[in-house]
Amino acid sequence: MKRTIIPFGPQHPVLPEPIVLDLILMDEKVMDAIPTIGYIHRGLEMMVERVEYTEMGFVVERICGICSFMHGMGYCVSLESIMNVEVPERARWLRLIWAEISRIQSHLLWLGLGADAFGFENLFMHCWRMREQILDIFEKTTGGRIIHSVNRIGGVKRDISDSELAAILAQLQELGAAFGETARVFETDPSIRHRLSGVGVLTTEDARAVDAVGPMARASGIAIDTRLSGAHLYDRVDFEPMVESAGDCLARVLVRLREVDQSIDIIRQAIERMPKGDGQAIETRVRGVPDGEVFTRLEQPRGEVIYYVKANGTRFLERFRARTPTFANIPAMIKLVKGSQLADVPNIILTIDPCISCTER
Amino acid sequence: MDRAAFLARVEEYHRAGWRLALINVTTVLSTEADMPGVFEIAWAFARGGGFETIREQIEPGATVPSISEFFGAAFLYENEIRELFGINVTGIGVDLKGQLYKTATRVPFSHAAVKARLEATRAAAVKHS
Image (cartoon, rainbow over all chains, first blue to last red; front, side, top):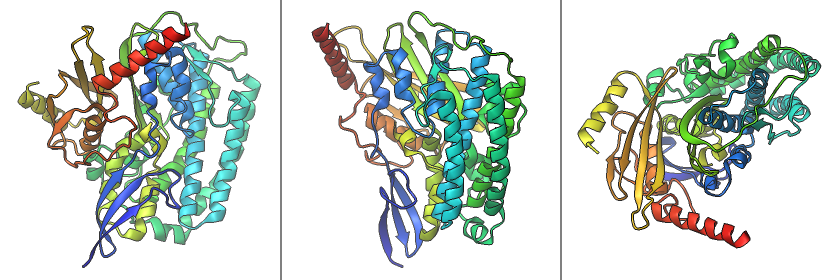
């Protein structure tokens, strides 16, 4: 057998962002994969040295265009924790609603990319058409489709009126019904099942061994979900992590399909349970400078994200660090690629839902 | 740091079913002009809602052992802290040989690099005031 090294990336049809895997092959079988990232490393964490803590949130949400809202939320929650700021309840509910809307748009984006990767261009268009509707909701409620800048330390900048919330829920439920038809194609189409079933299997033991997070872990039978901790009002809504046991590419698709429906249901519960009435407080005014440190965990669409913030009593933070879910899932990706066939590598990499902007910061 | 005691604690987390959540480093500059400062390293572990850390402070140039033996995913964090902070990690499971990141500044979070940037920022602020 002949040993060949093939560079996969940084430009590849299935990669929306640049990453390189040097694939070491014996014939068509991948024997090893060596990752190189850094093509879009912007050094955003370094900017705490010259951007004041009140402005840093705007930098943090620019880590990534898909996870923008939750990055902003994680940063603000961290500072609120250090500065002992009590956030108004309505603002906390609004954050939960926007966080779940983020999850829906991220999953729809990914499902579209997945469909495109395995040759279903119309399916890709359907997913992205639905995602546009979600971005419309973001635009209507925050003013931005990608970068929202709606989080502030102490709460949120904009309220959503009760009538708007009712209209959003109706729109989401309509979208959910339409999504059901699209989801059925992913679930039942023989070509998709043939392409994804049994491919890139990450067993439960392997997922634990490489500390996988998010849908990646849940598709391998591990019911891990940071929302289960109950923080950020998730203790006030009813949900169970979406878990599959097969651990293959298809299982990772199915987990995300079900999480779209689940997020719509969580938003419904939030709208029903949040305090009613327009004109309620949505922000606590914050004074002074932060001093202390905190680790904050959130469940982003791709899995657990951890923020570390250390403040030293000045207007500039001493350290800001974001450990993103894709960073945590790179060892799992390498584990899966090793031993696979070269033709399966694109689908395996894509079903991790890699976000390289998040990973490199 | 007491290498054996540290690895024993890491092994305890591993045996108890914790997962590696993060290895984080903070560059702490000394308040004394001629002293470089230290690195604060936190190895963070999560299990369900639980979250615990092992903390160590090390001098620049000191080495820390890899925990890849217990947590397979550690190699990525360990390559990162070596490239970005210049911390020597011994026995990394998968050594990426400095090719994980492509940075304009070599070892951008070393004490010298952080100090130089802070001084440049202060000088710029004085110039604009």
